[in-house]
Length: 448
Image (cartoon, rainbow, N blue to C red; front, side, top):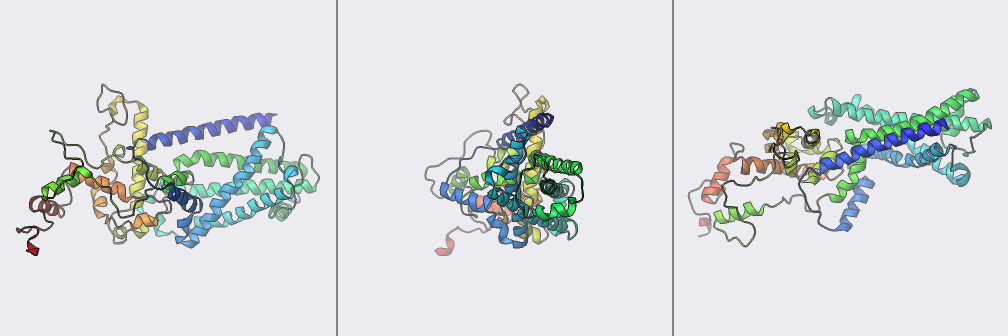
């Protein structure tokens, strides 16, 4: 009974705290601007099944793709055994499904053990790539400190989880062979049938019981640790990859979001007809164009920031990054997530120091802490982007780093009237002469 009470308290506390953290993540994502979800639902389901569940784009690099598949499948499959742990934990029994399912139970647990061994191999390889081989994309500036430790921590958690599974099953197998009470026959398991006797075969009954309970609790605790660690980790993509691929844009990669007000203004300036649509407002204060902070970005961009796997595939194919420029699409998404967390914490604090209007409640629309995304992302970075969309093509979970880069550029150029010195003559030529080149002739003179 004591074990059941402890199990109940631990489970409720862990699940409750995790639920609170995930609701907070959702609240943070909704700090962004509304954006409708348009397009074919069939294509969206296809994206979820092939990209999120099927890991389709991971196999563009097959070695890490296969290793990642082992760990991913093991993560999903072991949750089947977790169902039984919950039933046993609350009911006070042991191996609830074993006598009910018989040989099928042996098959399921054997499959879990087999995929767990492959996940262990994948985990060791991933740890080696990060810490021994020192792959360049895991050693760049934005991966120093917490991001690097985060990548190692989750792999260490994975090893602890596997230790829990094989301690539990291995000791259990030996206890069954000793006809110990409360240990029903599980059949001949794929790994534990030889691993258990080889490692625990000479131990006495009491010690085996302690090891089996140690493995059972370690398995459970590591699942709860995973669940509560995910909201603070890049591994949140395990969950958010599904909504992110569903809500991902279905437009062609190179298609930029139009700005009707600006388009019509340019048409008018160039003497072209403007057919309907929005016009530039004739007011003393012009509206802001683009975005300079996370509250000006779409909520989908904030969802993408929380979904980022930090794998660095985007940066490794970025032509700006490859040619030594400062831009890293991965860093852009990491910066947006960090800034979102900062804004959310300050709004939650209720400190009116951050209110734009001290007479109104602190909210995302009434927030000003004197900072913006430009404190995280330099103008040199956004100027370096060629908008080639190579980063978008490489992303395994359909993130578009180009979108926030364009929004920041639009804010800089259209709202601040600033920009790189070598770009400004182009804008001035279009505005004054209707041509990209500073030529004192009619735009269509060439055809006369």
